[in-house]
Length: 142
Image (cartoon, helix red, strand yellow):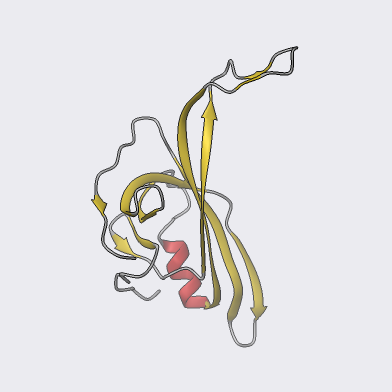
């Protein structure tokens, strides 16, 4: 079975559904504007953006994982589940928060089948939005 992880207070990705996850090797945040259906350019070339909300997209990857470690990361996002509560460091808040996300396509590159090491495991977490709201805010140091 896969290993369990203790919550790393320095990890930007703390937990998924309340369960600690291995600290990613790479973690980047993209803040996406969502525009209304009426948004777009008019014939005079003026953009009418009509932003209705902003959503967060987190891209993360893990390097040099054993087969067991990769299985442990993927187990936090089982196939067939649509949404996950993720606790992460929110750059806009300057602290940790928890929101609902769905996971994008998962990619893994094999480094060595002999050594049983994955070169890279990567995916994005995309905020669900809608009725979601901030449950907690911990401005503790990062």
